[in-house]
Image (tube, rainbow, N blue to C red; front, side, top):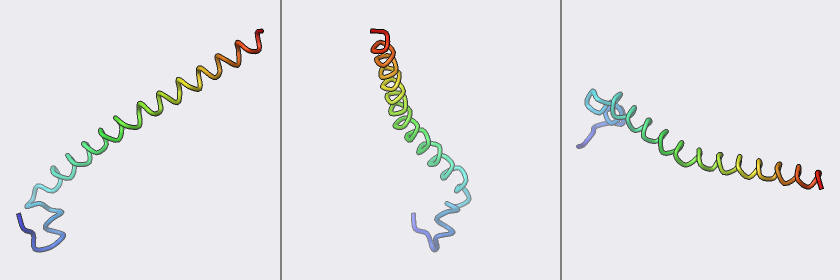
Length: 59
């Protein structure tokens, strides 16, 4: 598929909204799939550190 200009490329023959929206949603899902486990891991580590500090204070 050849485009005469960048505007035609963005428009995608009238289907640009659907094409770019689907790319955006796919990118958002991939970013969430990477960021969410990292945030969960950080939360688990901070909870474990808090638990260890509490146990240290008790003894």
